[in-house]
Length: 372
Image 1 (tube, rainbow, N blue to C red):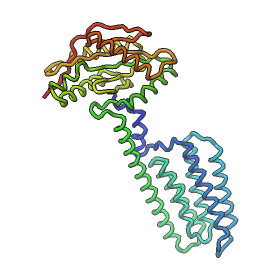
Image 2 (cartoon, rainbow, N blue to C red; image 1 turned 45 degrees about the vertical axis):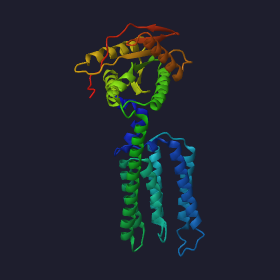
Image 3 (cartoon, helix red, strand yellow; image 1 turned 90 degrees about the vertical axis):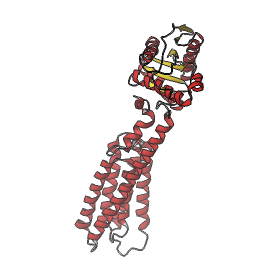
Image 4 (cartoon, rainbow, N blue to C red; image 1 turned 30 degrees about the horizontal axis):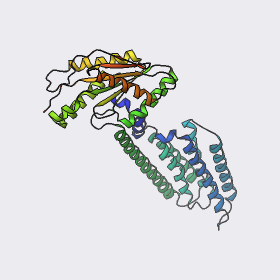
């Protein structure tokens, strides 16, 4: 469940890194459109720019002009049609491969024409999955063979077929693997930046972003949302008496209890030294109160074999009017937490429309772990 709390940071990146899945870039349609337009325009300009150069056989110039025009039409389509469907963008690659193969079939001599295959294949390798790249490579090999063996009289066409096919395939494979490696590294960095290294819960930075998203989600759906803040009482005494290693184990044990007791989809975070936060989507203040009190009872149930006892105070606040922001919700929950601590600790307080409702003391809440 902790992993689900990291979804806004790592889920997409992890899916990208897996073979056969689609990279994040494949959903960045504006960027893909800009790259597609640039490639088609540059292709057309390059072809037209070669026509004035010395050429022993100019019979292919009309066909080259036609292909340049088709590249221009491709640029016009990509630049003007706002697409948000991946299969349409996939057509850019297939269209580019077919045009390069047509160019291979008509140019005399072929010379540097095979280099153009790199353009659509690099686009495919960067933006799409291994499966898509494999399909595009098959299309390239087939159309390259048709162009060479069906239309070309070049005596070196067998060598060219193997050389071009293998070179472009190797380039596409290397770029795909590099992109996947980079995606994996980015996912690891994102997880590290979002996770508290000690407990595995979200850290404060990631929690702030997730709280904003959960509030927006609650506003859209009309469902309730509550925030519970927990603070381990007199935690400094734990570090002073048993050492920081024991204190770290206490924090880990409390975080594990939140994970065990929380629902799927709850946002769990360590937002301070001994302070924890739980965002309960779909829960009102009373349900959040019950959750906080249940944490106390279950902590006591886990007291077998303990050497170190800890108590926890909690403050609860629920999302109110449309003017409430993440910071004000945090302030409300923090006020309730402060009231719980001032009221004797080992209890839960609820911020309720500007007033605080202070609950009775919970049973002694103790964590089961060794202080040694």
